[in-house]
Structure formats: structure tokens, C-alpha cells
Length: 235
Image (cartoon, rainbow, N blue to C red; front, side, top):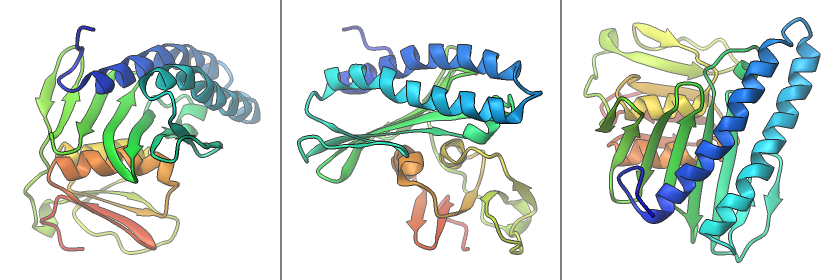
């Protein structure tokens, strides 16, 4: 096969699966925009769209690793015990409100280690991706580059994304709450954010972003909170 992006054949097959799924998701997004007068109707529609993502991409992914299992926020499917695809729609609440800031997060894990990671924004068709030991990258029709975290450390310079439910004091001069943790992680990797602080999240939503951040030179801690930094910020 002709490679679409820099990386392995498996990475490219996973990207093609994402692109096919994203095409239907863009159609769904157009539909949900017309449902804004009924928030409950929009939520039901997006839940069904999320299930369709899982169903439509699974057949493609099984061509990549036929014996792999599948983990999503809604489904856990046993595989061979070695390989597992981890999939989530991140930013679903944005999708419900017709906000285009959402993404599909997809990771391939082998023997409990993430080997391939992709975070794809269907509306602007921008892909953030990484393979273990090979660095992290961003790709779109207009731009392709290697990712590197920022080098800022002074609190007055920092832009920090938050996804928290309490009223804690926020650090840094600039704060953002985007509603899409998968893209928040990718943006730390890209140097758009210097850090990301979140309540605990479903692992399916952050598995891909975890590898992308690490391959871009960042650090990530998962405990009571999720703390992601450029490695220079002391939180």
C-alpha cells in the first residue's frame, strides 16, 4: 500500500480506518446541528453516533490485528490477550451542542504498552499521531511537522488547559477549558498548551494522547488527577 503519513503500514491502515469513520461522523455532525432546539434529542443522536463509530471502525481495525481486543468507554471485547485497540470519542459534549472541537482517539496496545496512537479531529481533518520510539507528528492536507512540547516554565507565561469539577485555584496566566481532553493532550505535545490538569478520565479517552505527549518530550502523571506538562512546569 502507498503510505499516507510517515510511519508504519499498521499506522497508515489505522489512519485510513479513522478517515472512513470520520466521513460518517462529519455527516452526523451536520445532522446534530439541526437538533439544537432539542438537547435531549441531540444527546440521544450523539450516543447512537458514538456506537456507530465503534461498529464501523471495528471491522477495519480487525484487518490490522485480527485477534486484537477492543476497549471503549462502552465496550470491552476480549481478544488474544496480547493486542488491544483502545477507542473513544473525546469531546462528545461539544458534539452534542454543535461545537466542532471533538476528536476520535485511537491507540493500539501490545503487551500492555501503547505502540501506535492517533488523535483525529474530523472537522478540520487534522491528525496527531505517534509510534513508540519514533516521535510524535501532526498531519493535515496543509501541514505536516514533528511535535515538540513548549519550553516555557515561568508562571506568567503559561497557558494551561483544565478539565476539573472543583473550584481549585488555577495556575498560570492563561487558562482554557476546551471540553476535549484528547485534543488537550495533543496540544500539550504540540506546544499550544504548556500543561493540562484534569479530573480522572476514562483511559480510553487518553490512551493515545499519553503516547503522543511522551513522544513529544512531555510528562504525564495519572493518579487522583491527570497532570500533563511540558516537563519544565512544576505543578
